[in-house]
Image 1 (cartoon, rainbow, N blue to C red):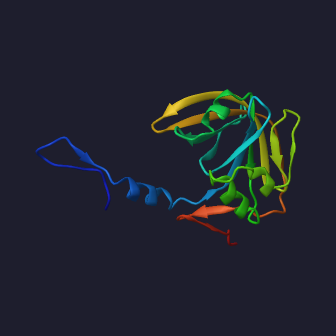
Image 2 (cartoon, rainbow, N blue to C red; image 1 turned 180 degrees about the vertical axis):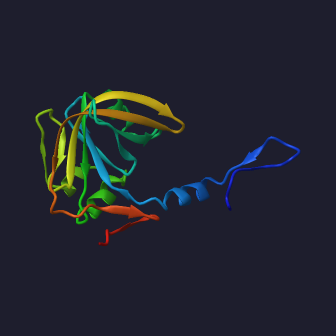
Image 3 (cartoon, rainbow, N blue to C red; image 1 turned 120 degrees about the horizontal axis):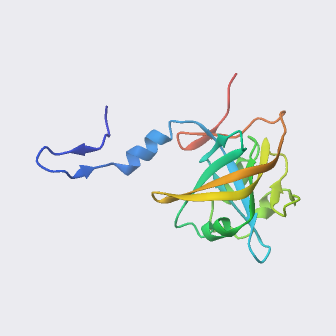
Amino acid sequence: MSNQATSSSDSSVNIFDSRAFRQALGCFPTGVAIVTTRTPEGRPVGLTINSFSSLSLEPPLIMWSLVNHSPSRAFFENCNYFAINIINSKQTEAALGFANSKIEDKFALVSHADGEEGVPLIDDCVATFVCENYRQYEGGDHTIFIGRVVRHSTITEHEPAVFHRGKFTRLSE
């Protein structure tokens, strides 16, 4: 097996190739989501993630993670609610826009409306999960967010966006 962490027999120093590790992680196809909330002043905030997973059915919990140096981290740490918007295959340009820190008004890229809890919900997503900000944990260079799902919706006729080996791809039957 290549690109493993290695150590010299004379030393306990480990050499780990982070780029190769990231490339190996990219072999796992994932869905793509845009997580949204509002700042204390009411401004919408959102970013693209693919580190989303179900966690528990009872209670209904999901989890996602965010790199610690993200400028949006404090907004998600301190919000009461956030939404996970699982994008469809025709929304990949929006995902790229929400991943770009240089775009100021990311919400101009999508049609959206506020949900009952006041968080922006992106239209035409495959699924949307509105979550109470339940818990947060440190996880290396990321913060792991756990959300308690308070409502969700699905649109089954849309094909989900899929990310694999550093690019968007499609599901094949």
